Length: 295
View 1 (cartoon, helix red, strand yellow):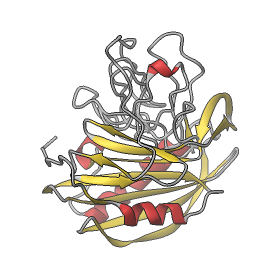
View 2: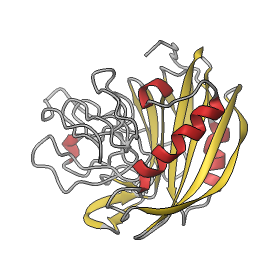
View 3: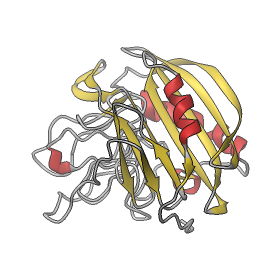
View 4: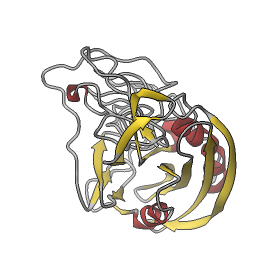
């Protein structure tokens, strides 16, 4: 679901953290070219915030901007973080990272002081801006960024439509709706408006040969971290390799009710759909330093 660097969700649904400025993306360029990139549908200016790579989306692109990188790989696409590659869904790349597939251009090569966010192997990872924490499924890892958080599957494989790239089995990332360019005034409106972007960023690239059709699996209200939210889930049928299951979830930030949060999920269709249910239910109010700051 995420094409990515060996470290991120490897399947197509979420390109690594390329889409968000600062938060989802950013498999470190220092990892040599295997940084997965989450593709973020909305091209959010990297200057807004530097996001760490998040594992949602179709694939993570390998380090394009740091020199000496390996073939690009895909994963959920959030924006690129310092020294990292672009985010999961093809958002702009952070300093030292490249933009996600279909996203912005890469930044300068990694500097000695730059490194990718630490990988959290169990429990949860905090999105301090939105005041929430994302659960980390078994066999996945989490990373925190300045404007969000992401979780990515450890399982990766050669992308069926582009064997020079690496895809991951799944990923997810959170970010303020504003940064993703999500339209709408309610959780339902935002989730319904975002799902097509999520699907395209996760499985619409050449890594899976593009999306040929989709089926709506679910669309309903849900309570997330004590907030009234809404999610839409699709099965994206691809022309090559694994189909994908993508979900866009929207809800008010527990730290700032005026700020809407979007969580993009993407997993290969051969994965259990319950992983999305469990992650959705497992999103909690952060006990960390959530500040609900405006972005």
